[in-house]
Length: 353
Image 1 (cartoon, helix red, strand yellow):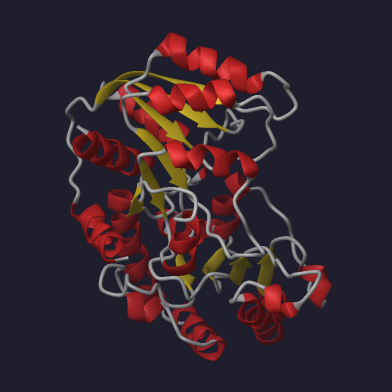
Image 2: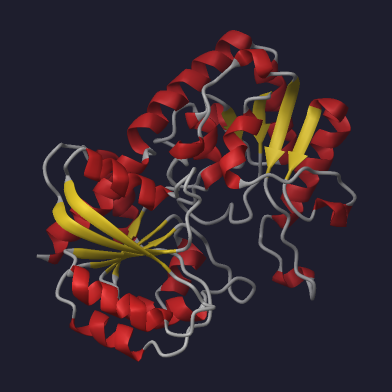
């Protein structure tokens, strides 16, 4: 855990430059929304546009295609990349022996980016990842503690911290004219169908926060996400690429993470909020207290204080706008896809050779 902790500070010490990283990158991922490309795909395109890589190729995995892994292996052999990036895949694939053989004999960095978090036994890796992680040289993930310990079951790779980057292709410009409500909350509700003992650690607090905000703010509060009807709350569902646009309708948004007790856990909600010039008030970011601007003003250890701080900032326009601007500048420097993908490629290349 000590080396993983050091990697947090190394991430924030990294400086972008315009030098060439590598020639060819191969990305193994899920299908993109072409209008709103995912973080890694978008970051690689930005690197190509700035001539920091020559080219990259994507393979969208397809569990419904029987020979998909053989097709992937052939594409890798033909492309002959300088580095391979494997994202968080899911699905049950047969006939992966050819792919595993290729990865076993591959002599350049194999990088896994995992922008999820795990809680055994409720939330586990997909079968395909358990088969591919042993071949990875570097794994970048956004949380320590139980998440890190679980991933280490499947790989002896070097582990480094990475925050969830901004979903930049979906960010809309801040437009104060469309604000018409005070407060919002974005997040799904995942509860175990078998036992409360299998719930994520933050489930009860997330429910309590949503209910408290609904009680206090009434129609000035809007809840977004799945499954809230299970606890008697009404919510709207929206796609990830719609979140920034919806955030613009409110003064600020609140939240409580399922994995709030994992050190360094940093989800997509704060990064999208900051880049949308919106404040996200939530549980503290353990280990990042001295890094996130205005950390003590935008976090609290219990739901009552989250509500209290929300009410304070809603009523103080100048203070809220000051915090919004500083968080926005911070996010543009550290949470952009270009910074994110440049950092992990540069670090992996430098350490591999």
